[in-house]
Image 1 (spheres, rainbow, N blue to C red):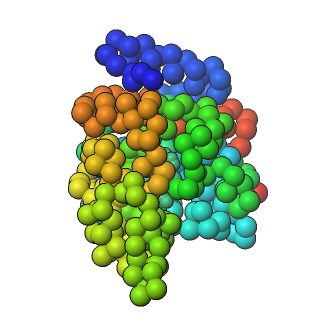
Image 2: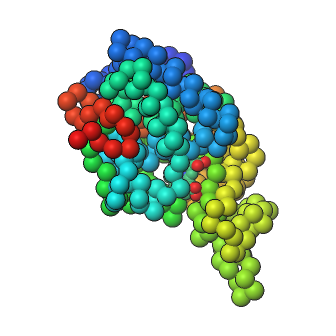
Length: 326
Ligand code: HEM
């Protein structure tokens, strides 16, 4: 398994990727709003930046939001729709956040350019900005996504990766979205920021007869496991969270990969990335070279934000992200 290296190959890859996006997906294009809403991208960036300085948990939330949106029904803001039995109501999305930031951006955009900028594009651009604000690379992403009309809770489980998934299960699900093994390793690097509720890694521990948690997953570093038990003892409040990256939780950097090699991957689905020879090699490469991670992030993020996009006469431009126009 090779990483994508070298400036020339990155440029060529970007062009090929862009052509792929244009040809296969219809009319996503760079600067799609240049004429219809020239300040769209800067408005979104300003909102993401100001909300992140008030609430430092926002970048992590926005980055997870785009993943959960794109994997279910494609990147079409189906996750923003409110109501009985929509994607938001599925337990797999209960801890997803950042909706208020998207709603605020949409409200302002509706004042400047009514009915023009889709919620799906706001989600993708906001996640892109969140990465940069947390110290990661700035990625150019094409726009022109339209908003979907369908949001059903039962579509969530079959399309979202669970932390208990094996490597094969993850690879299969990612492949069904057009994403490769390399994309899986790269995009998992998102866990370099953000937090997780204690319940999301509880399966790595077992409660003994004295009500104390014991590590059952021996792939985890024991000091790290003890630290997690301290922060998340048996019976902890469900709202308690820990940092995904125990070392540099606010920074979008390559520490995630260094943590994996130190057996400090928070979820079982993180730890499995070092149990397979080809993914382990990639983890070592990214742990040793942050620039290489950033260069590869660009491509994989572009692919993630292109999954199942609706363009042309598909979908609509919602007036409010929380409901369809009809
Ligand atoms: C590959 C399989 C993946 C699994 C099993 C997984 C699972 C999880 C879980 C269980 C949490 C904690 C949720 C909570 O308890 O609040 C989480 C957090 C997070 N995930 Fe993933 N994830 C995966 C891939 C991704 C991808 C591809 C991205 C984005 C590109 C991503 C971005 C994030 C972020 C940023 C957080 C922190 C959210 C916050 O701070 O609110 N994850 N993930």
